[in-house]
Image (spheres, rainbow, N blue to C red):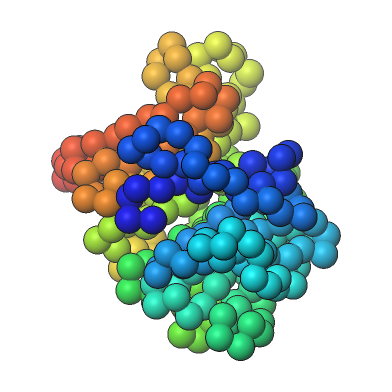
Length: 280
């Protein structure tokens, strides 16, 4: 909301809190009939789309002037990660246990399509021009006893409502939790765990078996650019979760659910370093 307001989904309280950033306080709360697990603000700032995780999932559309639910939309099993298109006309919702993404026309309130993705979509992000939707699949699809086991990011063409690319992350990648697109639309960032399941179980205290990672995707090429680790040698960045870029694109912010911390990464320096490494 123009950088002044933060909306917080409070699941166990069945409400959304409105937090005034400048005043550093909660100014009001909106009660809901179900536990909220995902929020998306309309581009005009007048409505909040709230997903409620349930087998027969629903989206509660909250009028932010009145604080009341204007109407509800029926979606799939455990909906989450709602995303509104930049023009405010379309809502995308990840139906986690249906393994699909619902495309909803907000004018007619009808579902236009359900796009199949590999396994348990839990996060999504749209490019600034609204042409591509990147979807993070929580877990690898298929058997876990293969030589290469990794979760994937699905790339959806929003014009044709179809998957046009599937980007496999490094071997051992699992637990994808957060995804965002840079303000310039050039890169997508996704947080996940990187498990070295093919190595001997040694030096667990150094995080050699499971590390926390940030993978970087080239949007135009729809390919994995690189993966960087968020852990220090002696201090882990446990359970990397949400990820977002600052509006000016200077920094990448990653929340660490296991350590209750936020990592702030200099985005320009990160890409400069990766470019230098690529050149040798």
